[in-house]
Image (tube, rainbow, N blue to C red):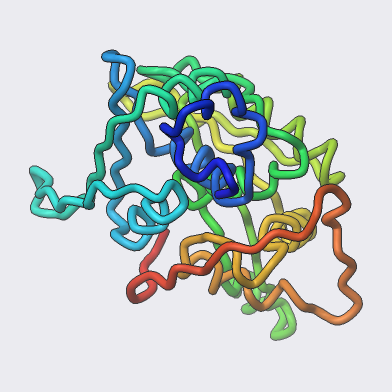
Length: 254
């Protein structure tokens, strides 16, 4: 993270601003999507079906707690890491995270220079990088074959989605569309989606270095668009930062 690596060291609580880094911003994105703050004021949990993603969070936060596999009622496997730190818990609260956040999460206090790292964490948690070849109209004309690309994020909190949409518009200059998705017996979900041109700009912004912490299988889908001829770096704020790419297991659908 930085010199403030020991989150529970004396004086850490008074120097929260100094703690921001690419790794910590990415971890905040993961916690905003798939993380949980317990109501006891000190315990935090992160759960994912991607073991690689849990390990990346552990490395970003320098956690000593181990990821534990748990079986789902349908026979699948989830990986869960739980740890305790009153200082980090309080810092997450100060940023804007909270217990039982799913329906009420809003704007977070993420510095602009780390927003791409934060958004990458959100995408790795509850987002999608979708790339496919569209041959729907090929029967009309053989040339009607298109490569589609979408970057999208889904959340049960409309204020959270609206805030991210606004911030990306300010920082990257692209505007996404928000769609309401409903399922019987469930709260509505809100999907923020960017089409190809906007997605390419966002991908180059959030993968600003080949070594940033990220989920390998999603980075692999973006790789083709990160160094296209004539590309221009859109990262205009902050200093260059490095982390790592934690390569995940074999590629699976998002």
